[in-house]
Image 1: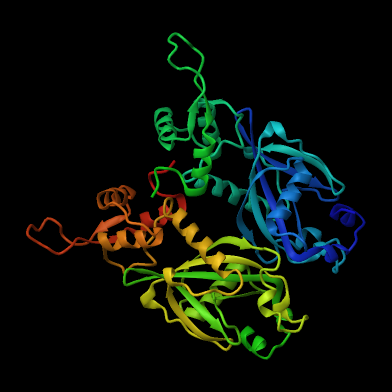
Image 2 (image 1 turned 180 degrees about the horizontal axis):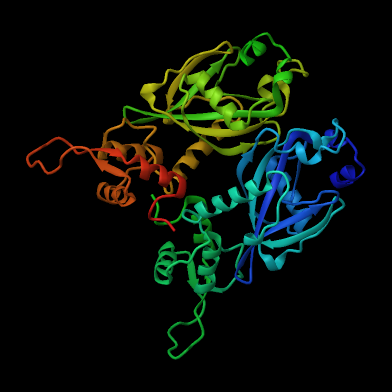
Length: 247
Length: 247
């Protein structure tokens, strides 16, 4: 029996399986047709859209729980997933389930651990489960009204992603294996929400020393754009220690 | 009655006041005599040193709880405090209190929210309370064995601080109001645990555009070093949006 089954039956048995007061919310970003997308779902019996989330089982740590929750929503077993903030405001979770009896699991005060995930849009298939009726990608600049404090959580994830652009490489999980410089620049622009200067952007990217040229740029008269991939050894090193320009 | 009183009496009443399963651990950094320090304490009846920590009351959010805990340890009401990670490994908290009865508050599984704080060493006075018998500064490269997973929490805080150096200004909370370039460089070096090139460091600092020269460097023959302070408007802007060199 899954947690979803338990909730569907309105059961209180989640207390036996999960750690009380702790929840997880995931902001899942994807990149498709030059737009940044986020995964949203609609739970049965709740009017508003929300972020995919869930609870931590007693036999899991928080990262295992977040991975399990995302796998259930996307089918993808390996996802780049990062904790970014804890959401603990008083009253943040209690309101939206006030129609339920007081002793019900959902009526607790939940401290939510926010994760963000970067996924390859092409590779994952959003899916509904027994407690949700819709699960879809949404453009980040066309978000509907979200339940609880999910808009705050989304905004905070996007701000974290923006800040991290200056210190960590990005793109491997969001772009196809081979990509052009304009595609890479477009990814940065949609995350930052602003245009970047083409020359400066290229210089900066090359200074990071994480790109490998795939096509032969020496062929004169060739009008096909240069194709790049990531040097994964250098990319992973930069993920771990920060980008080259830094201390 | 404080939470410390409750614990001293071995009482289980913490359940009435605090949210179960959630704890807070604080890594408090200070800078003194060219060394990076961290605040440690020893609880009564526990052999090992540990980080200052505590629990979240039912009428607090997690940031309020962390501020309250640090104020109790240091007397300082305003501290630069930042959430950095959640520690949730199974078994992380249960072991060190296995001498207590099973229904006791301390025997729960705690998910700990890690905060790091940067404080002015001169301004704060570490203090013991009813549950601790020692509270002292310790050089970060001379740490004793720590209780539970506190060494992991400390290491993670230091790594976060190092990573953030590349994106956020630092020093306002750690240095005196006026300081020299060598003092600033020394602060970066002790955090990074390595020497930096003097010329490169100065260029980088000036490129951030957050320093104000306090002494007159045009006086020739003057052998006194140039003194700086931070331009707080620019400093705070950089704290919020990242340092200038970035996207």
